[in-house]
Amino acid sequence: MCSALAHWATRTTNATFRSIQAGEGELLASGVEPNDLLAAAYAITPDGLVRGALAVLAALSVATVPWLRVVAAVLKQPALKPLAAAGYRVVANNRARISSVLRRLGMRL
Image (cartoon, rainbow, N blue to C red):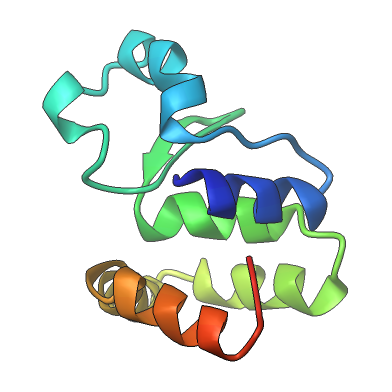
């Protein structure tokens, strides 16, 4: 994940998150190919390496904000995982635009 998202996730969860750059060694040791490092968000969980929507849901699962944990639990249900994956793709494909809008609104991750 990018450093801004890693900082946000660390502030709003009971876990420590690192940016791709800071966690590169661990990701490579976990089997991520060097060319794939920037292709998705990754999380190393007790169950192993997850990427994309599952990495985001792993982060939300340990959020200190209760409703974020509820959202993660709901979206982890097998019937809703495709919805979570689609939402992840939309955000990932538009992250520069989303960041720009958030900055203009005075918000930050």
